[in-house]
Image (cartoon, helix red, strand yellow):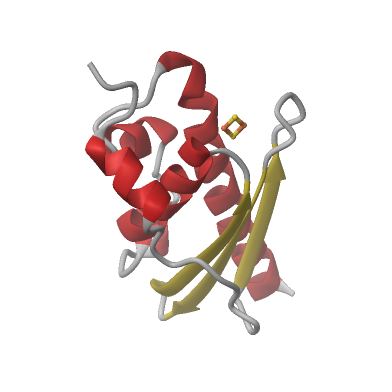
Length: 125
Ligand code: FES
């Protein structure tokens, strides 16, 4: 059996939503101290709906595939739904990740959560 699913390979080779949103409403950046990989998420939100999302990931193939899939999963979703995104859901949408690569999908969950928190904090300010 191949180590990585076709979906993982597809999102690694052709990542969706790569880039930066200059006037983002929320930005979240996380890193994994062990592997040194870094992920940054940018959100554009209107009327509590995620209108646009972009990411920059300096990391392994699974981290890139996870970020790409995570952006697809939350784009067009209400903020309240995006808050519930779990790394498991990201990994499942990719048709699975090897156990030792599950932490890569955790980065996506955390980066999105931080970006949403940033958005909430800015709203209060
Ligand atoms: Fe670190 Fe994948 S090995 S995010």
